[in-house]
Image 1: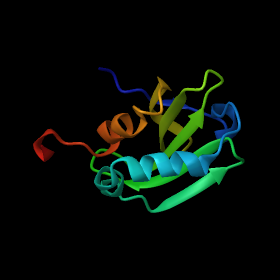
Image 2 (image 1 turned 180 degrees about the horizontal axis):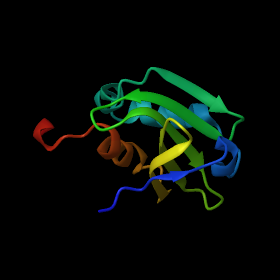
Image 3 (image 1 turned 135 degrees about the horizontal axis):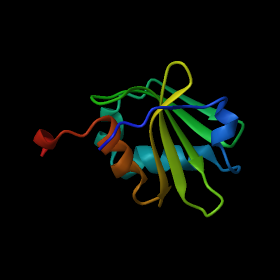
Length: 113
């Protein structure tokens, strides 16, 4: 698997449509609380009702995660690094997959079983 590194101009260019970021936070934090808390979420920001920014301190990723809602009602998320760089992106994620997929990218370790 190759490591995706690409640049973006602004957060706005990654966003698609408005959504209730509070509902998404609730989904992530209430479904499986220990998983969410293992991410070490330090900050949550609503970006113009078009994106949810989370600053995480996970095992695999320390930095910003941007979650957006696509026009087809699926989520996309991006692991962002300093310098306007995308470390990883994932598209067409259904709401019931969101926590699990984000966890695999920022925290999950096989030995946790």
